[in-house]
Length: 374
Image (cartoon, rainbow, N blue to C red):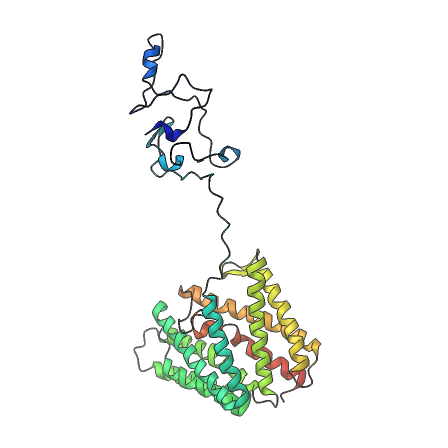
């Protein structure tokens, strides 16, 4: 290695002048050492032990030396302090500015997520205000796809075979019955769906029967039965506006949680269930939802008042957060990130229904208490 890569030697701390040489040789100690040998011996600097990285000693580490490349690119394999480590830590280059701190990432393709969200919103709003029956069909399709995603993940990850056919047929019937016959129709359809699940599973061997039918009953309640309350909202005279209020408040709650949590979130809300959620995000969800609730109840719901909207927004933020945590618990147990891949930037249908499903009965009940069933 050329001496130029080390730079000009300092005026102090050396035993003698430096010369170029093929290798470093330690000068012999004692009186046998003479000036002639010194001319052919590379001088060794008297320096203290190398400091640890960090602190003020690192201010000039790695600066470019005159007549040679940066020191970190020309490091010898051995060192006067002993053998070099097998994987030495790269030395920072003072000639380059420090790298900027890494920006927070949303963890998803926001462009795709926004595009898909807007597209779904257009379809939902168009079907909601044009023909009510079309929107009921949209709910039924979402329920069937959600059941397919849930039962598929259960079978893939846990070998749980919840019967999809009776769940899909019974789930769609549940939504239609809730729209046509109200809560009574929804309960009857739920009971028949549960019976169909029990009978359908009897066609297979008895091993794990109890486990499979239990998962089937859970799926029937979690997806179609809770979704039936959206169809029941639609039966009121101002039904489309009630459903729109329900959707807006849930979306606003999720948006507030994301925006505030991403920007200011420091304290974890439930780190063992969903490490990304923070207490600051929950406050954002509550604040956003309460403001949106006051506006929606005042201007969209017949006979509604702003203070009722504050209570409604608070309840929506709480139920939406619990619903999100509930599905996070399911996905963590299954060892998956998303329930599906149908919606780019969002995951699957169930990844969008997680906060909507438990919020539907809460909004339906509060609207009935505040302004009646319509």
